[in-house]
Length: 383
Image (cartoon, rainbow, N blue to C red):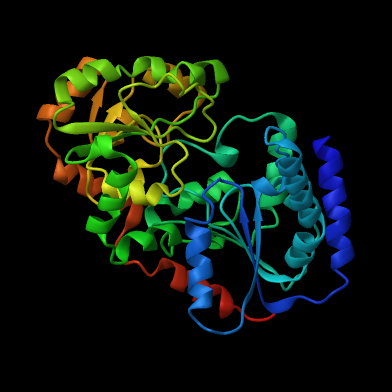
């Protein structure tokens, strides 16, 4: 079925190729469920700030998500989105001068793009933490289609010169195609924010958090769906609240690929559906994660990170890291819930270790990455 949809999309795209590329058209392809609260949104912002009459085409994975649990109206809306994906959005993509992605877009493998089009992979994470892309084992068909899509990339953007070789490897591109211009999605953190107002609105929505420090538990997915379902069984919210509940509130945000049942999650605030994870990074005092790249955001803001890596050995067998995990992570590693509670209560920030991690992955971030990327691609010579 996927092959059929890919082939149909390619047909529609190539029909639209009869129209010339528009120098002011930008296509933004969001396959990572960030709803443009990420590098794609920052790139759109950078182009719009020029007041130069740019047109934008937004493509998301929701365009092909049939919604069947909301009745006839919901189904019709999703069908209309799908029609738009194969028509208007195919047209916008075919005429785009600039295409930006935050993840792999599998239909890209079968598209013959104009030589005038510049395709930039922003990726949805910073740094080089766990291996990804062509650096991990994949089913042959997926690997081949991903490689064919990567062959269409003009450039890959990364957050620092230190991680550039790993991005060249993960995307199978030449070193000169990797642009260490900084990660556009981090520009958000350098703008001024009304943190007091943001916290007031958050407390109004989640009154159980008022007056407390916020601990965010954000684990990543495993390659085994059955293990994903068991993730929350390792989180003892009762123990957390008995020891820390007077001072801390526990927030839980699962990765989009984790399909654990959160209905029975008591003693914690389920924020898996919270629309903007960057706001949570601003609000939260402590991060508890395992192998998630969300650590990069907390490190960027020099906030304390704790690593609840209860299955480290098993995880490394299926998803190895670029570096030695235990020497690499910018915080304390714990294996049990008791150790985690103790570290939250009594642990201190190892600023020197955090600073080394931050410098390696970000160099000298300044909030101007999106503007640098936009300037770079706009100043390329015409093909």
